[in-house]
Image (cartoon, rainbow, N blue to C red):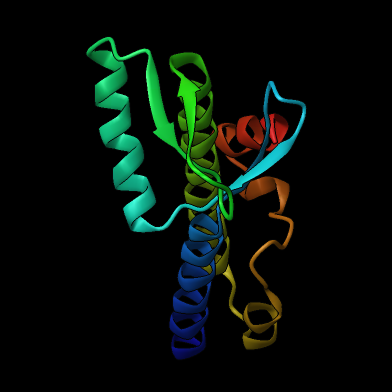
Length: 136
């Protein structure tokens, strides 16, 4: 059982990272939905842009996946950064609840049946997970 649990936790960790890196869709003021990836480089770029915003920069060149670079206002970039942070935080909080649940299971078949995205039983849904699920 311990081996199956360890393998499942590694599988879920990889799935969590894949979901984070896969990015998110964001409806913007132009009336279109844009997709933003969250590779490690994308995350580093968004942190750097956040620093620029804090220093008072009002326009930032950036781009959604598969789109040309465009100038985004400080408000638009803040919206992108907030959505990126919410996306990443949701997956990390979900994974933590998933891990807590998996660690309580005693049957190999129960552990093996879990997939990333499975509904977490109420007992393991933290207030933080509920909050992030409501925001999605």
